[in-house]
Length: 297
Image (cartoon, rainbow, N blue to C red; front, side):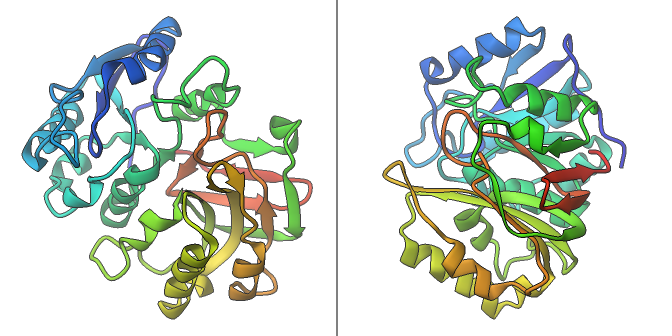
């Protein structure tokens, strides 16, 4: 599947597929992208507020489908997560995405859409860079995300993460499809037609405001599905509760095979200076020294 790349001068379609957002929350992010040379096109219902979600299902779909069909738009970018992506999964026009494949940039609740698009179409995405907090000049990893979207970056290495406390809990190498997202949102897809097929994966995980007992419940749910048997490599971001980092290693390490390399303390998660990951791409992981490379989006 040939995907358009994003370069300065290209258009980005900005949408709110899940929760509502106010213009003032995302205007600094929009201004930053504009200053870098990108054309930001807002969906008609980007700033709607329907209570639980930004807009009724039909209106959110309308914004997504409009930008998928728009030849000027190279990438679709969710303004924020929140709640509501799961309402769209069985109503998306997947054939339209197949005919006009585009990367969906988003995070948190948007994980459900990204994984569904991969499950149905093999469509890659970029996990991270919300417009509310992360797409800012202060976040050094915005440039990483834009390089991924341009097709110029095909790897992350230890020097890219200098100053971070990234560590290898278990060394080794692994190959598989890199899949990234928010743990609780991944689990909402269990047992649905939008669960990816069984294949070796390198899994990047994070979550927020989930206490350890609920995180373990999600891990155990995936264990009962046989999911961990397909995990060839594990990348752990931040699991924050009231802005405090929680240690999930004792919960997850008994569930994966002893040969599975594990890297933790990655700067991936619900905080401002967070790293984005490509998702749905063939990848290879070397735990120590850290190197993650992929074939492209």
